[in-house]
Amino acid sequence: MAVAVLDKDSGWKRLLALARGKFPVVAIGVQGEEAEQTVDGNGEITMVVLAGVHEFGSTDGRIPVRSFIRNTVDSRRVEYAQLRKRLAALIVSGKLDHKRALGLLGEKVTSHIKGAMEAGLKPDLAPATIARRIQGQAEADGSRVFKPLIDTGQLKNSITYQVREG
Image (cartoon, rainbow, N blue to C red; front, side, top):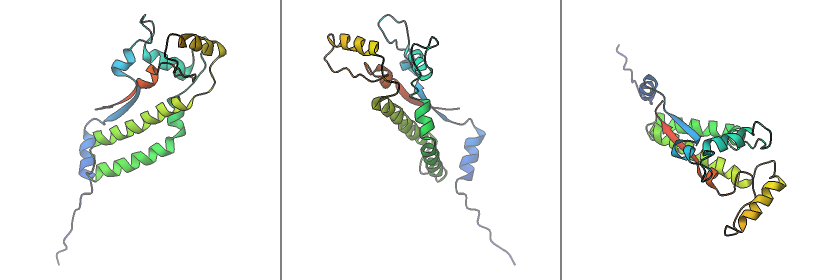
């Protein structure tokens, strides 16, 4: 008696094809052209250096740690794991390609990082920093924000994501 066997591929071959190649990744942070932009007109500090100083604090201790990337990702680790599972299921089913899935993940994490900056980070600004920003208002339109990491908005706007082939 012959038995018919149905071999239904639910995306396994697709996963194997991805695994044979290089794994795509999503890179999130200050990178690319934004990373090389200077903070001031003198070209003394780039965005990527400024981001690192705020993320880890300055070596001389004058600028405290205000982790806007690590703390955001760490505090939402479970949420991101669930999102990755949902996106992986969509990739396996053929409903979403891996580049678009990683783009969706990048958009979500980038949005959360910027949101953390907008909500304000601890510790609060030093009185000298607030005084310097108030003095700078005379030159601006009066819309300056007195939150850590947000002055001109240049650092916040430089947070991006890129989907890269592994």
